[in-house]
Amino acid sequence: MSQFVVPGDPGAAHTVRPEVVVARLRSHGRALFWPCMVLVADAAATGYFGGAFAEPWMNGAVLGAGALVAILLFLLPLIAWLGRNYTITTRRIVLRGGIFVRTRQELLHSRGYDVTVRKAGLQALFGSGDVLINTGLEHPVVLRDVPGANLVQSTLHDLMELSVNPIAGRRQQEQSRPPDETVAFGHR
Image 1 (cartoon, rainbow, N blue to C red):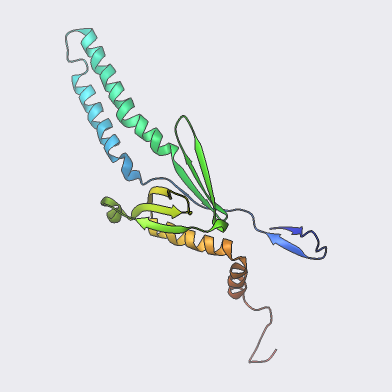
Image 2: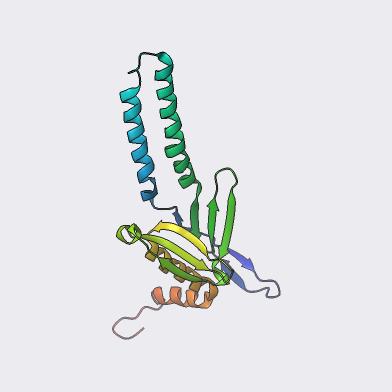
């Protein structure tokens, strides 16, 4: 931890806590199930029909169609899934998304917000869900289909509480430390 001196208070040194990454998230890997199934079926069909025709242009067309299906139905969804991620730190939430045009949005914990978890369909079965963060704007910010949605919600509540009320964080740390005084049989 580094120390700094508050202007106007030359004798007081305060500790500054560095920003620490708490979690890096992306949507649940379940989103890649169907693209992977398409890739397996595409590889099987291309392998079965490739070279089966008498004309060379037909075999080339089969290989080209197989490559096009793999690019459109597997590679693009994979890149889109990899392109969207969420980073939760001790001070903020950073949302990054996009393939060709990257967008970045940051939410500070100190601003305060409401956190809601919405689970639909298979999300409840897999323990994932949509985490809705209502910042008071027209539309809430949504962390889509994150794994461990309930844990993410409780972590965001804890981080927001520590950020909005730093005195509570210091009290919690002081209570977790053992006392500095040694006591043996009730006497010092």
